[in-house]
Structure formats: structure tokens, C-alpha cells
Image (cartoon, rainbow, N blue to C red; front, side, top):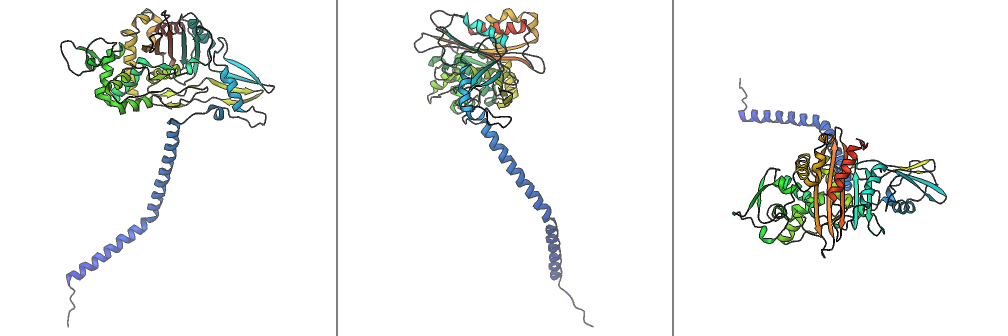
Length: 450
């Protein structure tokens, strides 16, 4: 009897077909699960895109229009005053805010509207008294609570008494060496600087000549740590930092992170701070060290620098209006929120170290030493950065300080900025005003909240 014989190759082909059919069947069996996974992934991608879009809008430099958006009724009623008509009336009350009030009322269309603010009357009264006796041409002080951004005091002063706008909200003033906070932040994060990094410079510390901006080291060079250069506000160190290490793009990026050329959301009209970064190396050195008059900032914006440093890099949206009530109806209730995070927590810790050095060993030492020795201040963390520059005619001197004084966990205390414009006679320095305010708050046990 004949025996049929199949070639092994045909058998292998047959086995491969069987395996292929098994794989196809297995894949088809998993198709519903794959469709579910792809659908879930697609949903997550849409959600991330939506959140990213709204987060970007929140932190973008889009204009903020309080007149249209801020006053929103909590209860629908046809009798609520138009916000566009209401807001100019409210804003006019803050040009020179009363010393002893945390709330005020205005009448519109025979309706009483009560505005409650975040102002602490005792602190407002004390700050106003300091400015009236400061012997300056102009002055402005704003004090914020770093943990929620509320304004606890906002006072301004003009020698002739003719205040047209609130100086705390105007960006007419050169930032001077306050900009070193921005430059130091960029150096720490982009160039991996630490407070103890050693650097060298030529000449005097408060000048900025082109021959001081060379990288050559010779017997006339002075060696200094980065933290000491910050505390003593050494211009050549920060000038070279901009020219040789950070460059134009990084400075522009960090200026934007710190809200320059951006609208800062606030309950009142706030003029944006501006920065112009020239193309030439020496112009860049001037900007990085603050040795220029084209970088302009408002006192409120300057206070946010200290808030970012002491609040772990986070800046809360500043606000001053707590609530608005029309008759028995509350038509607006404030809500706090994060405005931005310009620096990382580690950077903020380094800057706290450097701003503390400014108080203990730097440009604020002579003003602060007398209170730092007192026992009540041992539990307080105090830091500052100063800045001074003359106007182009050398007629006026702009004298700045941005500072913080905080204690405890959770954090309580204050951040502030102080601007003094001196004429022929040098009045009370801004750092002396800062020291007096901190001493008043700590010594009087003024409750600032947590």
C-alpha cells in the first residue's frame, strides 16, 4: 500500500498559518480594550490642553479690566449700580486714603454703597505720620501680607500736597538696584550661582565704568562672594554678570517672570512697570546692575519682589477691596489667588540669605542694627534690598527699599516697598522708614494675621 508523504516545508507553512490566525484572533479580542484606552488618553489630552490654555491666560500679560470683571453680583438684582460708573468713584477714594478707616461709603443714584478694604487703620495712620515728617519731595509706602497679597497700608505723600494719582500705583520711578533681585535670580537658576561663589571686580563698588567690566584679574582686583556683592550692591559684579554670563535673552526672560512689561491684576488702576534692554554690552551691564533710568517700576510692584522671596517663590495676587455692599446686598466678595511663581523655592531660600545679609552686613546695616539686637526681634526673619539713583538732571534722588519681616509657622508678617524722592535736602532715608515700621509692628504687637 502506498504511503502519502508531505514535505516538511508544507507542514511548517501550515503551522505558521495557524499561529498567524491565533495572533489575529488575540488582537481582535483585545480591540475593545485598546479603544477604551485610546479614548481615555484622548480625553486626558483634551483636559490637559484646556487646563494649560487657561493657566497660560492666567499668567499671561493680557490686560486686566477691573471695571468690567471685578464687580460681580452674588445675588441677581436689577438695582445694582453699573460697575463702569462705580469703579471711578471707588478709585478716587484711594488717591490719599484716610488714616483711620478700613471702610468707606459712597452714594450713587440715591443708593449707599459700602466698600470694605484690607487696610489696617493703626498701621496706615503710623505710616502716614512717618511720610508727613520725612522732609522729602515725594514718598510712597505700600505694605502687603505675603501669604494672601492683601494690602495692609498704602500711603503716599507730596510736599506741595497736590496729589493727582496714588504714587504707589505709578511706574514713573527708576528701579535702580532693586533690579539686582531679578539678576541674582537669573544667576542662581541659569548659571548655578550659590551665595558663597567668589567673584572679582575692579575699582569702586558703586560705580560702573567700562574699564571695570573686564574679566582680567590683576593685583588691583577685589575678591568678593556673591552674597556680599548683593548685600553691598556692587555694580561691577552685576554688570559683568549680564555681559558675560546671563546675556540679553535670559535677562529679558527673568524680567518678564518678575512681571515687567506685564499687566499686574489689582483692584485699582496700576501702571505696568517697563524695561528696555539695549543691544550693546555696556547697556546690558547697566540694566543688570540697575545702573540705569529706563527700567521703571511702581512701589506696589517693588513690594512683590519681597513677597516672592519670602513666600517660597510664589506671588499672590495683590488686592485691597474685601467686599462691596449695596444696601443689604453684597455685590462683591474678594477671593485670593496665586498670580505667578517667578522663581523656584531653592532660589527663594538663597535670596532670603542674601537679603538677610543686606540687613546685617550690607547697605541696611546702619539703619537696622539697633533693632536686631533687641530680644523681640530674635524670632523674626528680616531681609531687604536697597536702591538709589539720581534723575538725569541730578536734581532729585530716588531712594528705594523693598523688605520683609516675618515670623512663625504658618507665616505671619509683612512685605513692603518704600520710595523716597529727595530734593536739595536729604530727608529721612527709605531704610530708616522701613526700620521704623518694622519696629512699630513688633513692639506694639500689632496683629497682622497669618
